[in-house]
Image (cartoon, rainbow over all chains, first blue to last red; front, side, top):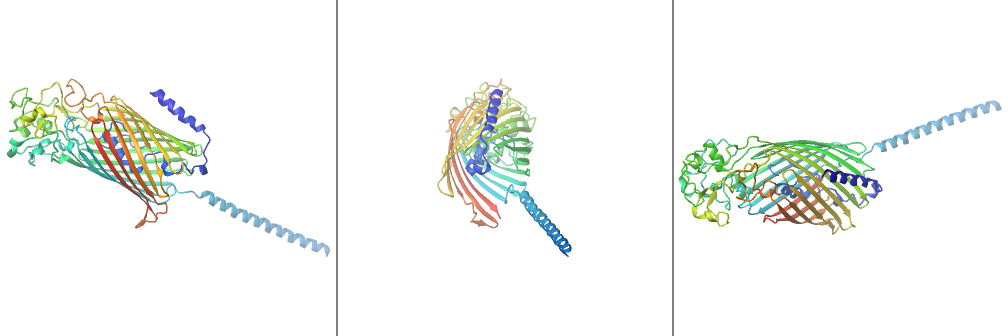
Length: 70
Length: 504
């Protein structure tokens, strides 16, 4: 498990060696649909998943606590 | 004479040179100042106050209610609204208030006291020393009609509740916009639960903002105000005297439908005489994330959380039934053979215990998002999560969303989500648990299952915010519907509508 995590971190860190994208080249990346997060309108979808499913977290948001849910 | 003229010319030249030098100096100073002023200019982190309002309606139905031990009506509906107000305090700092109110009605929760279905609840005040607001005393005038069923929605107070939450967040961005510090505090409340939370985070942008590293910590200090199944709470309240309190003049039936002698030592009794001794439930979480731009059209994030929970992690409302203990009922004897059938409208099985789960839980979810800008019309948004916890649950979640721009202002959002999980070590269905176990639950949210969710959304965006309400310009409208189906039979649907305003 820990090996997998370390491997994943090394893999993602190695991506930083990719060519740097300049600010003026980020026109596509700055599109709102390219945001690396769930869309705000899905907030309550995430809430019901936290209640109805055992897994939670690792989505940039809350990962437990604050409700009598799983 | 000639000599005097040379001296005069020389003086004039010197004066001109001084003027020129002075002029150049002044000009240079002015330009320098101008440049300095320009270099001081920074784009504000948030240009204007923003207001986001999202409302949601959720409905589900199923046949595995946890409050009635893994069988029974699981119908639930919930209406919720979330309001987020983001205020730029100055060019570097933003203050956000995030408030949510959610009201539900639940057939499952209503059966905390299933005997209300018969109108058996009297409303008389007893020496009710539990923390709930529900009356456990049946109406003596209607004793012959004391019935209940896991398949009938009860009319008791526990059938509905309101959850309210407010979260305050402050963020500060550095002058070079390469680091962000955040702090937040929250309060949540519902009838059987209260929570306070606080946390903080630090974000660092590197590599010309191509790489982002984020670390966050959160603590939630929660407290149960426990509500228990009526029969268990009442039994403990009258110290096991089945001729007193709730049970006074109420017949208890055995598996054969015969009325038992309540004075016998082997009459019905809960498996444990101890309910919640620790009402606290604390959550400590540490979240790390790393985002990386891969190309002009692709970027990825990896999320890694470690979550430790301590305290009463079971839900005190949820009944369990053991296979190695005799069964007892209240209601219509002739319905006992059909107890698990939806046709059972008038008999209820007395619980063996409330669910019991370990007082610690370690959760480790790891997720990743990969977004790719295919072209000016379509983008690809993907998400995957692996989850592990020390209750024996592992899960996989995969999500794909395909935003399609059909005009300058409208975008469509078809999406699909697949989820699968293994069962907790302590889960077994109705009447399949054994009393020799230390921990047990029949909550199907902790069972093995998979689910499919299909969604569709549409958004309207007006970057010029031409439509106005008071000082706010309407920036976007979003609507999204999702249909969710588990292989255990649970079906749910959720519709969300959101508005985003920007203040002048």
